[in-house]
Amino acid sequence: MRSRRKLRFRLIVSFALFGFGLSALFAVAALYVRAKVEDQLVVSSLQRDADSYVQQMHESPGQPFYSKLMTGWGWSDRTLYKAPLSWQALPSGVHDIYETDQDGETRHYKLAVSRKYGLIAFVKYDVSRDDLGKQQLLISVIGAVFLFGLLSLVLGLWLSRKVLKPVTELANRLRDFRKVGKAEPLAPYFADDEVGELAHALDEYSARLTAMVERDREFNSDVSHELRTPLAVIASTTELLQGSPDLTEKLSERLKRIERASRQATELIEALLLLSRAERRGPTRGETTEVGKVAADVIESQRPQVRGKPLMIELVVQDEAVSVNAPASVLSVALTNLIGNAIKYTLEGTVRVEVGDGRIEVIDTGPGIKPEDAERLFQRGVRGEGAGGSGAGLGLAIVRRLCELYGWDVSMRPRDDGNGAVACIKFS
Picture 1 (cartoon, rainbow, N blue to C red):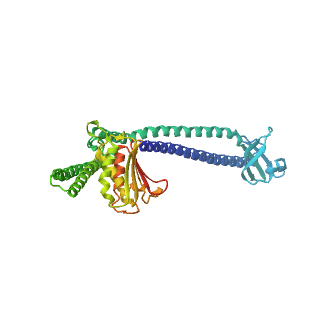
Picture 2 (picture 1 turned 180 degrees about the horizontal axis):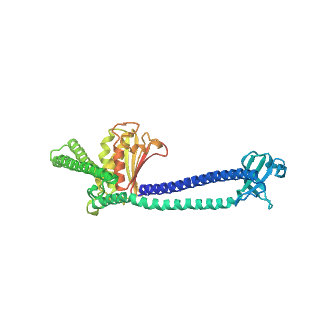
Picture 3 (picture 1 turned 90 degrees about the horizontal axis):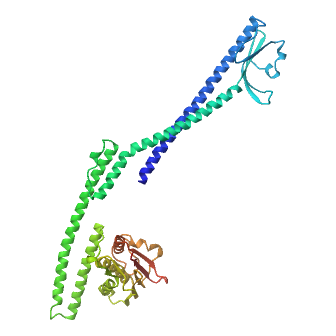
């Protein structure tokens, strides 16, 4: 909507500026041509009258010179001293002069001089009296420019609505697809023009996108079925073996590890399928998942990762009422990555898991992180530096995506003393 309004605004402004500019250019050209033509006509008329006056004085001395718009004077060479001093040395031609009238105002005149037969004729034309007419013409032209500019603005408003109407209809039909849940062909509803070509291209893109989504959905379903079946077999077989009466303690411990690994794989598959579908699913029957209980299960499943290191894992549940409206498998995957990373990067010391105040924090005494790298660690393919820094750098990226899916806030920061890091999930 913002882009469409911006395009419409640009169309309106373009029409308004074009109309105003064209009108102003036409007005300037008209004033210039009028002034040029008027000056040429006045100059030619004055010179012609001055020449005629000299000819008249030569042929009919004493006969008065008559003109409706101009005033003429004539002298011979002997009586030229009677003419104004500033006129006496002027050659033949038309000259611009400025004189002060009785009211003290400076007036502009054009003076035509003709010298012939020993006679001199002067014809003067008052240009100042035309200034009022020029001012009125200028005001009229300026008014016309603004009027045509306003008309251009109105035309721009109308044309922008007319031109963008097919684009608006195309956008509305695309929005309707989101309500209906499926895409329908767009091209049949539009003419064979640029918008119709765009609709045709969108239809082709929609067809490719729909085919890709269908393939992805079928792949997810196949993967879910094909992976869950062997995992279910492993889980059931492990359960049967654990019920064997002659089972040794060492073998029982190994079977429990297999059972935990099978459960973690099942939870991971479920979480990844939710991410692939961008589907948020809550626990069944409206139940909530207790964060403290899931954290305890994750810690027990991660204890074998300690591998004899001088490392202690602690769980502190400050508020047992902290729960989330999400499947236990999703929370388990997120905590497995956070707690597993803390164990992997901490050579000695403690990994402390605190639950309370609507959040869970994993605090370790490992090498720590740089404040500027805290956000970058959640990017796909970015691995942490330090002890045991192996892996593909996908764990924290998966955690971030799961948290975004359920509206949680996950973050990493260095400890206040600089020895270790703090990973935190704040539940909404």
